[in-house]
Amino acid sequence: MDFVAAPRPELLQAVIAASPDSMALFDPRGRYLYCNAAGLVLLERALADVVGRTPREIGLPRDLIERTEAEIGAVCATGEPVHGEFAVAAEDGPNSAPPRYYDYVFAPVRGADGEIEALVRTSRDMTERRRAEEALRLRDRAIAAANGGITIADPHQPDCPLIYHNPAFERITGYAAHEITGRNCRFLQGPDSNATGALDEIRSALRDQRECHVVFKNYKKDGTAFWNDLTLSPVRDPAGRLTHFLGLQTDITERVEAERLLREQQEKERRLADLLQNALLLRPRPDEFDGLNVALKYQAALAESNVGGDFFDAFSLDDAQVALVVGDVSGKGLAGEYLKLSGYD
Ligand SMILES: Cc1cc2nc3c(=O)[nH]c(=O)nc-3n(C[C@H](O)[C@H](O)[C@H](O)COP(=O)(O)O)c2cc1C
Image (cartoon, rainbow, N blue to C red):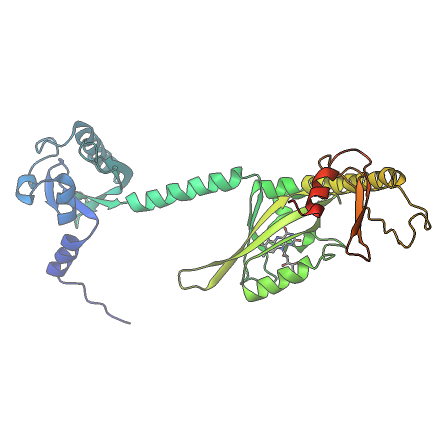
């Protein structure tokens, strides 16, 4: 059996003295027996001013005195440790630092006969951890409140399953949390999801660990198709190693549908304009201008500001003259074009 020698008392004392956690030792009547350097910084007192005195005698703030006395009483009465937290506010002032937060445990120290001989209070500065937790909570709330889907997949598990999704992802897809977590996100795909090569792009981006953006068809739980605007990004640790993939999903079905309707409408308008304006064209008989072959130029006008159904054409004649044929249907626009042709522009 291995035998580990007990550390020398001086060594133990040195460890306690150097501990970044503050440590204060009390007798059962609430007098300080000892306080390490970190504890003295908190108390803003010297060791000699503390030892042998109670928190009340050294003039600590009232709430701290009352709390310490109550807790010493509770530990002595129950023999159980007491856990708590406290905040230390900086001095008031325009540029005063924010308060620092401490967690502590007040524990009994028993002698050889099992009686409580002393009490030790160990306090740890939790300010940085608390700030980090607050920042995480804030981020969690923002993610939960987001309108778009947010998903995280773990590429180190077989088949890269989803390990996180926000409520919006459930709303978009119609799937419940237990139907999502642990599955690869391809369960949203259907027969024409790769119609535009989106899946090929996703596969190559995931393979190369790079970001990609695709718009493709996905299907909700009830089978309804929707247009998914998906951005995938690799997430890396400080050493640059891939840890996760992040997915941002937006259902853009309404936008795609509106764009399709607009295109259809524009096509309809173009066909109608073509039909109406074409019917108004003057078509000279082939023998109308002797020796001249009249070419017709025509382009349907859609916007009002365009030459609405007007037309013109110019021909070089043998003796360096130019013949111009114009068809002014709506009475607008031709003047400008004519000036251009005449070289005045
Ligand atoms: C974080 C993350 C989110 C994803 N989100 C979707 C999604 O919303 N819809 C989808 O069809 N595929 C999504 N995918 C892609 C599929 O999970 C899968 O990578 C894709 O189908 C290509 O792989 P496969 O050929 O093995 O199916 C996502 C992938 C990752 C890593």
